[in-house]
Image 1 (tube, rainbow, N blue to C red):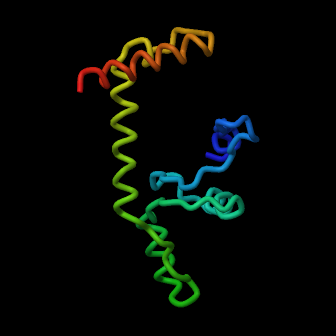
Image 2: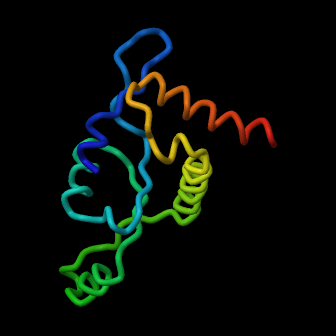
Length: 122
């Protein structure tokens, strides 16, 4: 997760310095490691990552030393499903799923064409 977040560059319309920090991040239980949470806290990125059952029981077994559970917004986490369904819909486009193209501008065009197709159908 850390290498992916380090490569984020969102250009700004006025040609200013690009954004490198997301406002919020949603992830699955697999991304709930201490390293990831410390990294997000250090970069001041709010996150919605559910607590794994074994981590919850370990925290509860420690009693007052276990600390408080981290905040979790179920409605924000449910929106993660929309993103996954959209990516799977794009992968239904064979050229996106197989990634035969080598050049970035060709891949960008292929993904754009794949995204336009469901948009036109609706």
